[in-house]
Amino acid sequence: MASSIFNRLKSNRHVSQTLISNVCSVRSVYTGRFANINLYSRISPLGTPNLSLVPVLDQWVEEGKKVRDVELHRIIRDLRSRKRYAQALEVSEWMSSKELCPFSPSARAVQLDLIGQVRGLESAENYFNNMSAEEKIDKMYGALLNCYVRERVVDKSLSHLQKMKELGFASTSLPYNGLMCLYINTDQLEKIPDVLSEMQENGIAPDNFSYRLCINSYGARSDLNSMEKILEEMESKSHIHIDWMTYSMVANFYIKAGLNEKALFFLKKAETKLHKDPLGYNHLISLYASLGSKAETMRLWERRKTASKKLINRDYITMLGSLVKLGELEDTEALLKEWESSGNCYDFRVPNTLLIGFCQKGLIEKAESMLRDIVEKGKTPTPNSWSIVAAGYIEKQNMEKAFECMKEAIAVLAENKGWRPKPKVISSILSWLGDNRDVEEVETFVSALKAVIPMDREMYHAQIRASIRAGKEVDGILDSMKADKIDEDEETRKILSLKHDKAE
Image 1: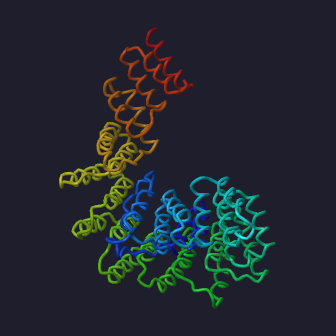
Image 2: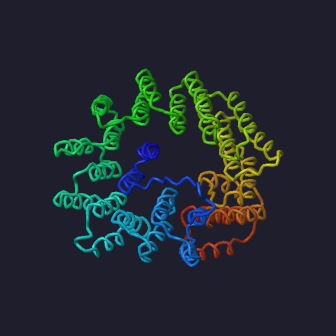
Image 3: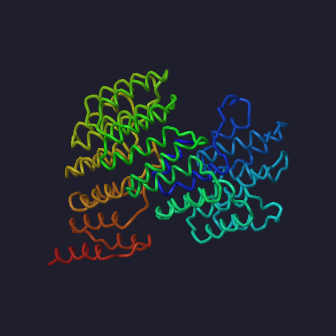
């Protein structure tokens, strides 16, 4: 929970989602201990977002199995944590409609939030407005506020919060945290300290999240003195238990400011709060690398290995990325070999980290050689692995090799059907193809590319260029372009003018 809060603070887009987690207490506590005999074990593997869970739930009842509200709540929490919001809403609505177990006000608040997440703000408002006055308790008002914050609707958020204050529903830190999230989401960071002050004036004690939001607002505006004063205030509060994230957040802002000694001081403080938290170790290792300290990075890596019986892929990805950041590519290769012999499942995100490192250093041929060695060992790369190398070759203006690598990427699309190539990479390759390869080769590539991305203007332009160079007619291509509702633009007309120039 805590680590997700810190990560989302780095991305304004997701701050409101953290608030939702706090308000509705959605952290998943299910461990899978009884995975073979409970309802969760049937639902959890059904990860396709558009797959309905209702038949599974109905079958469970038809088999005479007991439906426990505790388990359904756990299922909803787990689905939300994995962003399977539509399925979480299905379970929630099935639970409330069947009346097989109690449906508490907290459960209704979660349902309201899910409706906003899945069906939109208007549906959430309708759900809220259709409640009786007795049903509109503080949790319902809080859930609707989350919806407004998530959608960045400033006016409605402020008026709704004012209503909560009038009703006495703003007596905790949660609504104020929501307002601060709103200001982060709408780039009004300067307003956040005023919200913290208002809380304190109203006798409401800020919680850890309140202080983190305020620290983040000062740090993002490079007001480091005020940031540290807020931290000192936070440290003075007996009800606040500062964890590694707060100190690492402060350290990160000092790293960005180039104040390395200050950063190191707070990283050391963060270390005292780790308590074997693997996410904490990974985050601090990365920050030590950002600080440029190989010694501290390696020291904490050794401590991480001591604290855990077995390292997982995420640990290796973090450490490989840190060594790449430090420019220690020889150490990175050694660590990759260690990972390959670890017995962990083969996750291509691990070697991809090294591929990126090689490409950043201009060692594109080495990156390709490494990838082909992996293929020779019987592993099938993900499309992104080949795309990384293709992008590296484009940087070196070696379009022939970039094209070959991109063809390899498309050929292994089945390994990751959700993969989408970077537009700049595809644009560069298409432009080169249109000017350098024959019509048949361009058409073959475009046909394969259509399995990955929708047909677009640049794909047509490549075909038109190749056809004009070959002296072929392009009327059929233009008709297909029109059928796909892609209009000719200035670039199209410029390409077509080449036909007339050639005729002359």
